[in-house]
Length: 122
Length: 122
DNA sequence: CTGCATCCTCAACGATACTG
DNA sequence: CAGTATCGTTGAGGATGCAG
Image (cartoon, rainbow over all chains, first blue to last red):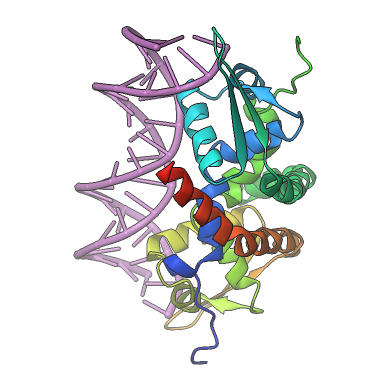
């Protein structure tokens, strides 16, 4: 067998890196899912809803998602300030795929945990 | 608004952590995709096909996938040794979802790169 | 050929304090 | 309320060498 193996992972031509570099971090998928459950959410509401995320990481994650055109940010010039976040159409098209992954995880989590225990036992 | 916000991310009850902890690392999705294109592959073939992965990370990734019951490992007691890897049924059920993500990435990558450039200028 | 052991680096992440 | 700035930690991942 010579070279019928398709080459993956070359940086500029890797669809997997493309996807994982954006939603494969610790919080992006979570933020997208939470935003997908409401029309709009304020920063503080997102923070409360996700719970364990730090303020810094929520800011960073939202900025990245905004830069990618997955989240729309609206500032209301009030005192105190009011900032609302919502998904863009691009994110709406991604959301079902994420939900599919979550559903798969929920269905298979029990078996996987069991498999891992058995594996640990050797 | 009080508490109609669904709480995510509590460690033991978080479908997103469940999924990301397994395929959200740097190489798992890639390995699953490559294995999905062949019946079985030897360690060296996987290594060549993925290209940029280090030997260590390929070993670690394969062990994790095996522990989760996503990859089946078969040793042929020869000298030199021959080890073959293939997807399990559980992994086959996950693979289409990953392909959907990759397709989405390929379709949207151009727009996202453009959005990010505009954002950087902004 | 297929690994395991070791060391090291770097970036993601968290904690804390401060600001308009 | 919604951030920014700074610092310290941690662990994923790479490089290298050795082994069955």
